[in-house]
Amino acid sequence: MNALETIAQSSMKQETPKFEIGDTVRVSVKIKEGERERIQMFEGTVIAKKHGGIAETFTVRRVAHGCGVERVFPLHSPHVEKVEVVRRGKVRRSKLYYLRGKVGKAAKVKSHIQ
Image 1 (tube, rainbow, N blue to C red):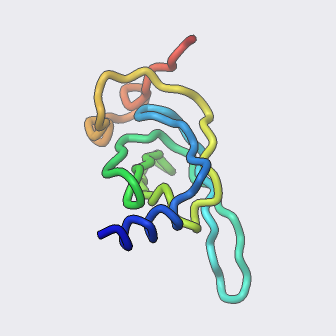
Image 2 (image 1 turned 135 degrees about the vertical axis):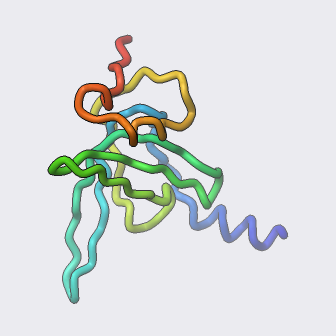
């Protein structure tokens, strides 16, 4: 079991971004198209964080052209270039799946003021 843990430790990112559920984040993702690579941005609200360690994932939701789009990103993936927090959210839940049923202003998360 120690061999698996050492491999997992070596492939984990050293600097992980600090964000929580309800935050609006901008995720930079490497997209490979044929020979070339480019970086695509995906901005939305973090509605879930799961697992831990090497298998940690987070789900980002946004509404594009009236249609809800969700993407699940592995935190330690080499395809995830960086995650930057656009604004902090104030929520009292660990999973925000209820936002899937909300439309318009009802789907907003309150801003966290320090």
